[in-house]
Image (cartoon, rainbow, N blue to C red):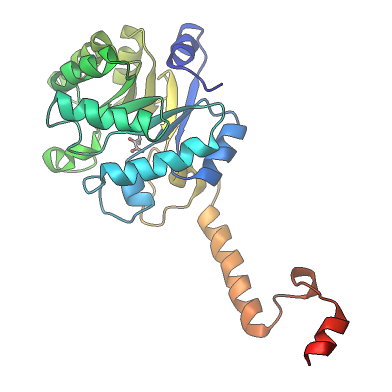
Length: 275
Ligand code: KIV
């Protein structure tokens, strides 16, 4: 039985921290699930780390559904959230409902995430009313990168901090079950976390959020283009893969791979008949 949004909300009530990771494929999903991660986000960050786009803007609903299906096939226990890509919900409630519904109906996700505060509250309310749980996303919202002018910390001025707090309260009132806070100063994230009864999930928002989320490629050292300041590399998987592939490349060229151990035998008499 997969984790529910009720269980995620209970974790905050009990003071239990909530780990969340992004994931985009079946094999990795199985590993995260077996490791006990309770919440998996199929983030539109896949546009950058899986597909090589230079932002999340070009990601389509079909790409998101394709990867979400792969992830849900690998997950038995975690709550799976599908990230609504740019222009699949900003264009109105009906679009939002149709597209969010596809994540649940076609891809097996249990919730969706969307970016934006007060101006998205009505959309969140509509989705929740028809039975689609919503995770909000505030602070640095990468789908607005052209408006924000860069990947910068948000909420640093008094007015911007007040707006972020108001946005968070609006999303809670609209029925969001949790909110991602991305690149927000630690004290502001702490205040928002204390003011909300739903969990905050931080990324570059300090240690006081109810949970944390990381892009899996960042924490595994697998994304070569850059390492964000908020990422901790638990592994340098990219280096390990490079070493393994270099060795394979050399062994094939030298004739050292495959050996008898990786090959198949057959009845010698059959071979004699053939020759
Ligand atoms: O797309 C994504 O991976 C995200 C997380 C960084 C929260 O939105």
